Amino acid sequence: MFLGFILLLHCALDAPRRPTHTASTMSTPLRLGILGSGKGSNFRAIADAIAAGTLAADVRIVVSDIENAGILSLARGRGYRAEYLAPGKFRTKLEPEAEQRLVALLQEAGVEWVILAGWMRMIKAPLLEAFPRRIINIHPSLLPAFPGLESWAQAVAAGATKSGCTVHYVDAGMDTGEIIAQAEVPVLAGDTPASLHARIQVEEHRLYPEVLRKLAGE
Ligand code: GRF
Image 1 (cartoon, rainbow, N blue to C red):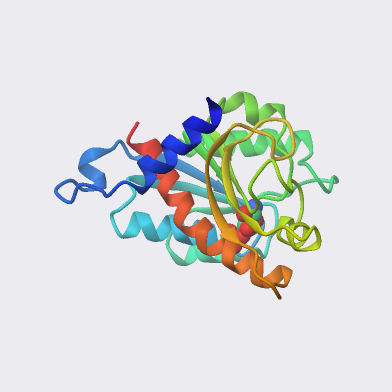
Image 2 (cartoon, rainbow, N blue to C red):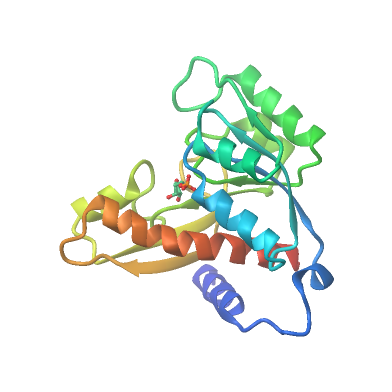
């Protein structure tokens, strides 16, 4: 049944959009808070869809745990509020005080959906409880295959013949939350981790805005 839901969502996402309705007339704008630790290409894809009028959403704030992350400069360049959040002493999660500050930042910004776009820390109770079933992530594999770090390298090392990306709700586990949608890519002979990641990212940049568009229409 669960697989059926995913397939149905795929069909819905792939269905041609009715040309007489724009996203802004069909949907309630989503109020997004975007969290990222890296270069921010998924943020850019979402921002491009909003700018093109194909996604009814409003980016209220972009937050990074890395002071010089590309995602922060991209966000500032587009006039979005962008904040560095000092993560504290842990490597894989925020210090509890930092996570509370993050919750406060997101709530004060009026965020309703928390969008992880290359965020490299586990999400803990304060954030999960403040945004129940309102935190989503994009992961560069066909979950449940290859959770964790550098999934593209894991796929190449394992000799996988296909990989892809998954958008899922975030829970307390590592890449374990309920799957919303997936997109598949082939792993080609001669692929390096970098070439496979590049192919996966093309699909990420298509799939993440598509999923948000679907959520905006619900
Ligand atoms: C993406 O591959 C995403 O799936 C993973 O981290 C990467 C972030 O890339 N969670 P970018 O910063 O959006 O370019």
